[in-house]
Image (cartoon, rainbow, N blue to C red; front, side, top):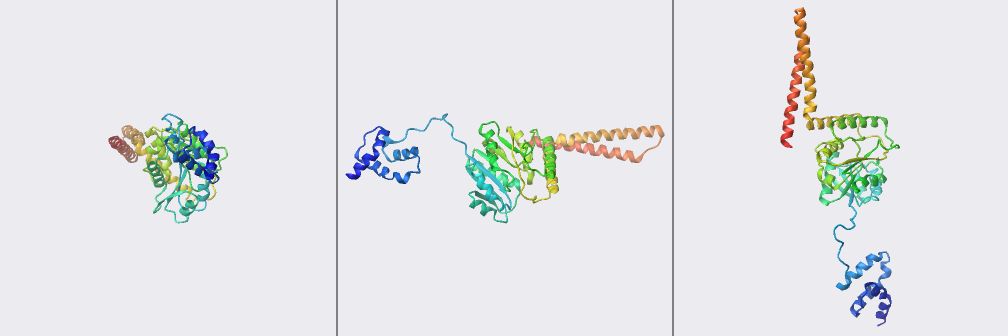
Length: 362
């Protein structure tokens, strides 16, 4: 009875809260819950009320969930970090990133060092490739994971600490406000970005070439710091290999009708590039040119072919005019005219054939 009286004294506030009479069985249960109060100090009052309602009768249960159309739940966010041999930086990148998203997933693209172990200990979930397959394969894995797990928003950033995770809210804001499906963090819009001159020149050239082919214009087409809405996550799948995947996103964004926005982000390079900047730039440029040729064959092959054919015909007319004037046939200019007409005609027909094939498979 003493315990019961103690329960009555401690549980009086619960009786007032629920506005019902306390029967002995209910009072005994609430007494036990109240005696555990000291152990539940870390639980908020709403959480304690929910637990009490769960263990009491139907009269004490919480009301029905809000109807659809009420206050929307916050979107679930994930950060995907593709990386290869980044044991030096990946731990700090994961720890900082966890402050801004619900989960961090590291795509370990066949690293031979301790990248996966360091990432796991820092609190990330690691998805590993058995061998190094390239950035495009790592991004495809990231998008597949996001689709399978139903994430609402995904952020991509590099594992070498060149991106500042503190910029993540800036990338998320246009997606959260439903203004954009893809948000690109532009290094060239940020006044304090520390980009070496050689890299800056190469990136601007690649951006210029990409913008020529893609109908989506960006100031930094090669930025790996991006955010994606659920619509973009469902739409994007990459066929390119290597590091031209960012350029491919511009083409896919237009084809899928995705809204794209840029925001300024800082960047800081902490070590020398792992690959030769020249070889890397040439490789990406070659891939971008391939993207343009496959998507716009009439423009890529047809227009140059038409120009060559026109020059060849002009050169042939000139050869015939010289022959009529001087009664002498110039072999060199004649062969050049034939070559230009042949290459131009071949280029035009190539463009027509590729355009027909692309139209057939659309």
